[in-house]
Length: 524
Ligand code: ADP
Ligand code: MG
Image (spheres, rainbow, N blue to C red):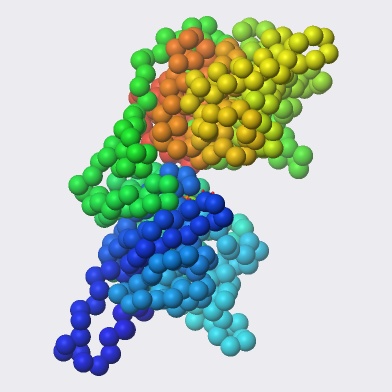
């Protein structure tokens, strides 16, 4: 508990602070990067307080300072009104702070119960604390809709349940203040709804919740107050009830942003991509794609929705030529091979398929190479880049890159910098510029805005729509339902390697798609 700080002199004691947490003038630099600059924030007790900001704004750093992972260069932390030093996470736990990480820190082959008591075992004997924990767990589960089987092995639980174990773990350590860093990124919409019910329950019992997210919708739905960070600074703290997504977006980016995708209805033409009965079995014998058949027409965007890991990655790889499959694939009516040596990324590009891969670091860029080399990547055999039979025309390539960098507003506008020194959003602009500007018949695009700032999201979305309006076919894979619904003309939901169902984007909604993503309610 953090409230037992006023001893004696009850009658004249100052009232307990209304703030669970207060940070004053907190700064933290990593080398030349000033991750947090003179941050002050007050979090009211018994509220859900959102912290929103673009990638790299400094949210996780600030919370890591609060949890004792990083030491601030300057500033002060007050817990329940009392200045408190938090040199390590044990001190944070003692101060009543619990943290649910972006990447869970559970021991996969231990049971739920074992994970929960790990680190707080009493004495050397596990057994008494196990039975005590079992009772406590039951109570917590009942109080907060946090039901998980205490004897289940963690690695066999769904991500949503693993997250509940993380929350239980914090509550078992008597956390009064719970910090969640981007908790919904790994959840289905139904799991996210459940998490929000849990968080409301915690607040209603008097606990304080800090929710870090870059999703405006979540902030609007669940928080009482929200603090906005931009480039290491705290820009504003506002009451959620009196703000709007547009206002928050403007605070995050520093200018007005169009949150909606602006597009006219599609006018689809002839089928560009036709696949039938695609099947993929991985090296360990697991079937990743199960008889997937679909079409994408000229001038339309087909969105593939689904929780990550339900076959979307394999589908993109098969279409991009980097993964073998059985079935048939036709582009503009002509058969393309799904196996053999003629099935590769180069051949697909030559046939008119461009590919913005899901993982830009693994597949989209060579991080140590310069921006201009990356713009050539995959297309360096194109005739316009050849000086003669033996030599590439590097000057032509650099000129071309400079033009693309200007058109796509890549910052910094320097084609000699290695790809790794651009931010995520600018790296993605480099990949998107390279692929879209080849003017392909079919654009495959995976998670185009993952880790990308909302300003850059607006721009990338506009480019994808422009390609559609130029009569090209687009196949979009995204785990963000907002993005799927905003961009797509038709939507297909994948679950367990199969197509669960198909909807016209304008006639469906997150709830319906969310059910299909969980394997329910589809009509194949
Ligand atoms: P957010 O959580 O808002 O996306 P972070 O707090 O993770 O932002 O990062 C803020 C800035 O600090 C970024 O520029 C990031 O690259 C940098 N940064 C974060 N952690 C480290 C670290 N351990 N070493 C060096 N730089 C870091
Ligand atoms: Mg973060």
